[in-house]
Length: 340
Image (tube, rainbow, N blue to C red; front, side, top):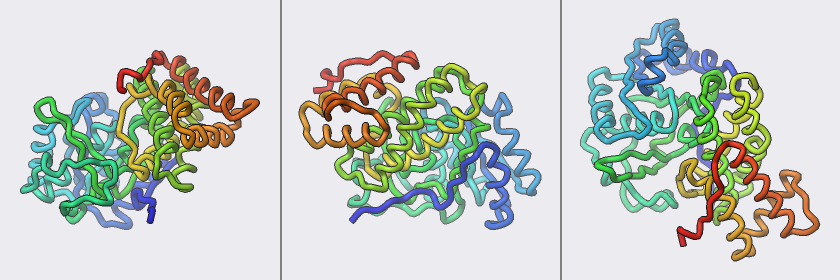
């Protein structure tokens, strides 16, 4: 049996944040909000619109902004302690994948301070078959995610990653899935070119990996294909023009969500933009050595309108299109044989 799981509510449209957040008061009756973000966003007042909205709804709020590019165990512990002191009934994560991962883990520590996150780390390839009971979250606070980048898809996934003493741990369970995700492109307009490239290519890798997963379904295929279509068409313009191309920004926001849903439901490997340097060569090798992968890539090429005189050429043209976008964003295509 397969299933498709995602946050209970997903809102998407440029400028949708104020309307979506109305539900915190009108529907859920929330009174105290704990905002998780990073230092840059906080100091540059990028979360002021969220704070103003909370003030307008008379929801008290506290902001924790000690998150860097990597969620560190010490910050998660201190964030959990701050939550227990403040006692929020809603947690709002505003930021990239690191911030959203940290918020998921802080909620665990807030509601289950006795839990050892390192012992909860498991092989995430198929979280349906875990052998240990995972502590249920969401009993004290709902989790709302507002991504400011278009990449990891953490805002719609049951995964979180953290680092402790240079070791990376993956937490995976449906109980840490956010309750509400708000995709508002207004939060992504000022992304610098390097973040636009890295986040967009992360979503690309997730979409390709999800489509070629052994347990992909017709449902995940739809999300993966549309995400890949958006990325191939709009990432170059978003990279070149930034906030001058509002359509491209919004299309990448949608792509991030769809790619996140696809990989979260196919248990594909979690990886960052560095995987984009190898994805084209990995696709080529997969197509050569695995007939099923070749068939899947051919289906993907046809769905995206990429032609060829035969299956081999169509797959080659698909890979070439992906390579062109990767190189356009300043990333070098590298051979992945070093992983063999």
